[in-house]
Amino acid sequence: MMEKVIEVAIEAGKEILKVYEKTFSIDYKEDKTPVTEADRISHSIIKERLKEIDKSIPILSEEGKDIPYEKRKSWKRFWLVDPLDGTKEFINKREDFTVNIALVEDRKPLIGVVYAPAKNLLYFAERGKGAYSMKVENGFDIKKAQRLPLKDNYADKNTIRVVASRSHMNEDTKKFIEKLKSRGVDVKTLSIGSSLKICLVAEGKADIYPRIGPTMEWDTAAAHIVAEESNCVVKEYKTAKELLYNKENLKNDPFVVFREELEDYVFDN
Image (cartoon, rainbow, N blue to C red; front, side):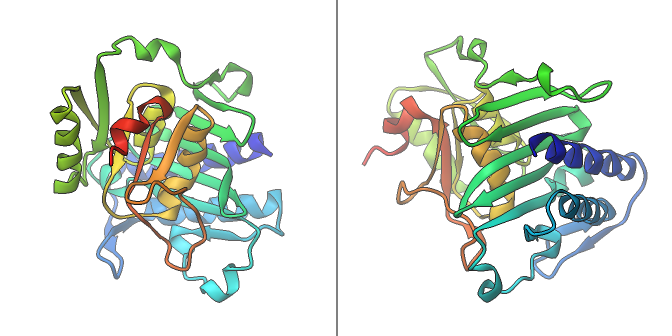
């Protein structure tokens, strides 16, 4: 199934790039977040292709999210999709946008695919089978994928690299970074958009990603399993509990992604 899901993400990414490379209009949803033709096209492709993989598995997508909780609360397994994560980056012609596809089972991600089409960069993972990344160029060959984390990225052990959102840096995140510094830690901050922030920690290019601000379930599920399968931890920031999916309210609580040996720096109470 994994290779089929990857093919779906790559196909959607190709259509997204066709819009990216031309002039396009921008609409706004009721919550004032932007949406483009690319979001809708990607949603349509992913929905159609996932049904071809297994029509019995329901789909919850950002662009088709109005499914009552009374209907979905009984779902044991479902697809959780963000057809275009990082729409603001997309609109501003930055490359940090992704296609996120996750298969959630018993409220936890089982499979995750994150594809950044403008970077030709793919991340994928399945529970118990590891996480991988690769460049998608001249076709897709899963045998060329590298297992995560990439150990060479841990060269400087005296610095904690904190990745933060380019579009959503807030005061709470700044306080988190200052708290690390107050403990005598040399902190380097990195900025990037979309679910690539989680993937940077999974890859070993960053150490901690604090998201002390609003996100939705489809923003995180695919990258969540990529992080966990590369020996990283994803927990709610205030409670240190597991991040779970298919809640009645689809908003995530503030959370943090980190290399497991850094837990004392994240939760120091």
